[in-house]
Length: 601
Image 1 (tube, rainbow, N blue to C red):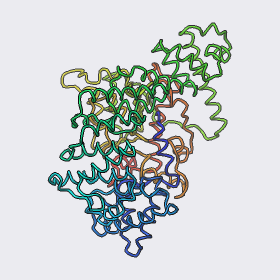
Image 2 (tube, rainbow, N blue to C red):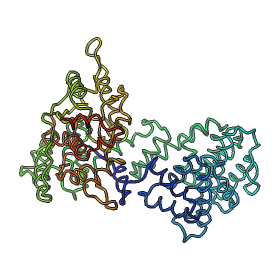
Image 3 (cartoon, one colour):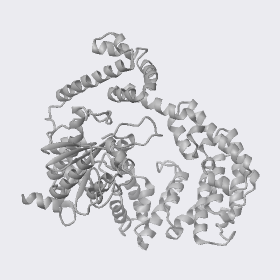
Image 4 (tube, one colour):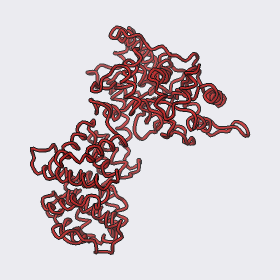
């Protein structure tokens, strides 16, 4: 299945073990804070140790886990420990982050100020030491409390050292930000006042205009929240001309980033500003060029072949990118040298497509030989006896009947898709692979997506309803590996289906206790790095090699190549093998009915 970089980053965080999450993290924090024999300073250091050793877990999550315990004694211990952290943050040599960063981290973690009176009192006592941006954060948090408590206008008071009433604090901070000038802090203050707490939002229009115009003049506008908040302009009394001016500047900011070839930042602001695609005509082309450039550099001949076949207008773009990435060598000359033909054979689009198709077949054979030479581990042999291509409603119905009647209450799934050319395009699933212990199915989502809601006959079920029957079942477990992206693609592909969300019958073997149980059972020590990726896990547990050569390929091409066919079914089939090898069914509360039935045979 295609993987994105964010998943790799998550996998690389915890070199000493998977990070604690949810209840596990809460229990670890409770263990630290509930030990009355531990001093306050030691508690603070232990909390920071949890942060450091928890795979880079955000310290806010560590603190929130403590507050979520709803225990007054533990909350008091956490309150004292956090004050100790803040006091030691005054010394730059003590902690990793500067003082104001710790204030921000701590302040954002507190659910209500009544749970941390000592921490709040300490922050107010040291208010003048904070940076302007941190003061704006404290001010915004106080506005949230003000809104929740429904106090009368002007009645909410900060401590005297913090500057008096909320209205006065807001005016003072805004004036100070404009004098510096610090347009980022000014923007945060305005957004807080106008959106968080409208009763005190009577800011002079000229100050709002000064922030907007000044930020544009200082080239800071792309970083300001004020430009991404259309509600702010609607809530304020700014003129229609100013609102139109801001919208023009939003488009100018995006176009400027497009001119710098910064597609990532440009698209992020494009979404944040809610700009229309017609207002930024060059952005889609830039995103597509960046995507094609990556495929050219990585030698994804299968993807390039599919793009040329479906979009003839990309021929000159791909040819230019190839020259740029290969020191001026043309794509035609490269194919001629590799395939021992004349360059004239590849001057037409059909010739390029044929040449790339030949390169795909050749590269696959070479990759197989290289893998076999580099790793003597035997390749994975799938266990399911038959594999079927499902491309009709009748085929889906037969697959669902098999899962309901013969799957022993368990099936594994995996999704494959062709990478999109840009973020403007939705990521549809091309192949949904489903495997049981007896049979495998490759569901052709490209063919079924247009007819997903069609009812074949009176009283029958559509494709979406049939898939809901098994994915939403209360008696059948479905297994995946890093399946968040798979389920997201299925939700986009089959929007009429309602079951592609995480539920109590969905099990992701890459998470939590399931992964730990697998690696512990097969000889991995507590402090050894966990296998990263499905292929590494299969090798560690099953002692076989899972080829991954077709991971990034054109999954919308029909018919599938034999290599794609084998890759897709193996990714799902091996999950059943992992499940049985690790006896993971025993970890389900009360034991797995599927496991019991399988063991009884």
